[in-house]
Image 1 (cartoon, one colour):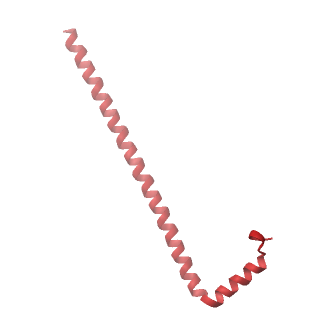
Image 2 (tube, one colour; image 1 turned 60 degrees about the horizontal axis):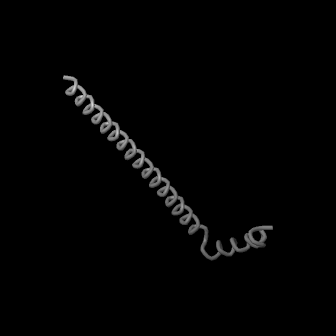
Image 3 (cartoon, rainbow, N blue to C red; image 1 turned 135 degrees about the vertical axis):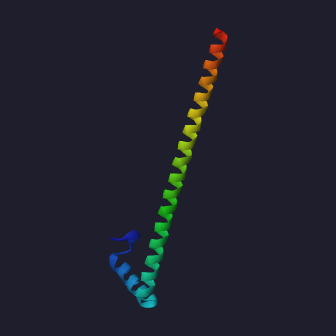
Length: 83
């Protein structure tokens, strides 16, 4: 039993007819084009992930700097009130 009631033999017959119509060279081209598209998609996803991580790291550094600056301002205010 194959996909949705289609047997393996029916699939092989359809594949053989397609190969007779288009030839094997077209299949090689389609395969390489499809492989290139998948490779490009994976690269784009990887680049997007890296950009997101860099943005997150930049935000964390900015938050740390803001926190440190706020704490330094509080310490300066406390030092002024002690004098």
